Length: 160
Image (cartoon, rainbow, N blue to C red):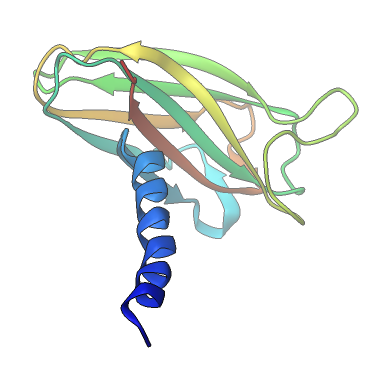
C-alpha cells in the first residue's frame, strides 16, 4: 500500500474524532440512575453529585427521564433539591409532560421505551467550587410509579 492511500484511510477516523469531541466537549456532567424493577417508589430518591471547578461560565441543566408504556399518567411532578458545597439548599417543583392529550408520547425512542430530555435550568452560574448535589423525588399521588426505567441529569457549559 502506498503512503497516499494510507492518508485517505486515516482521514475518516480523525474527522470522526473531531466531530465526536466537538459534540460532547461542553458536557461537564452526565449520569443516570436506574429505577429498580421499573417501579419508582416514593422513598427512592436518586441523587447526583456534580463537581464544580468553573464559577465563571454559565451552565444548562437538563433532566432525562425514560419511561415505558406501562407508566399510567401523561405527566409527572418532580421535587428537586439542590444543595451547595456550603450546605445551603434550594427546593424546586416541576411538572414534566410525557404525552399529549391524545396519549402520544413525547421524546425519542422505539418500542416500549421513550426518553425525554427536559431543560431544567438555563445559564446557571455555580457561585463556588465544590460538589453540588441534586436529589430528585417524584411528587405523584401514587407511592409507586410503574413504567419508570431511569432518571438522569446532564450539565452542559453554555457556549460563549
